[in-house]
Length: 102
Image (tube, rainbow, N blue to C red; front, side, top):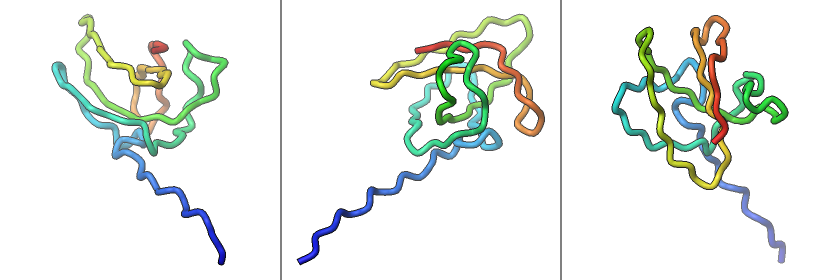
């Protein structure tokens, strides 16, 4: 008798795994998201966590008004997250403007 292990189940990447497929968000939106299945984007490590190797990521887009302060609230699961904020678009270079370790 030959006993083998079943291959691990495949996890599809989230729809917003790539910058070009960023999920648009608006003020007041509540999101339920996961990074399960996400892949490396090629962006460098965040400035607030430079010694950490780049991790997998997901993307959201938001059109901010000038001179307006915004608040992002997150409920942290059992993972350590770094959240980075960029200006620019996915076709041209993204420029990090802020980040936070959660």
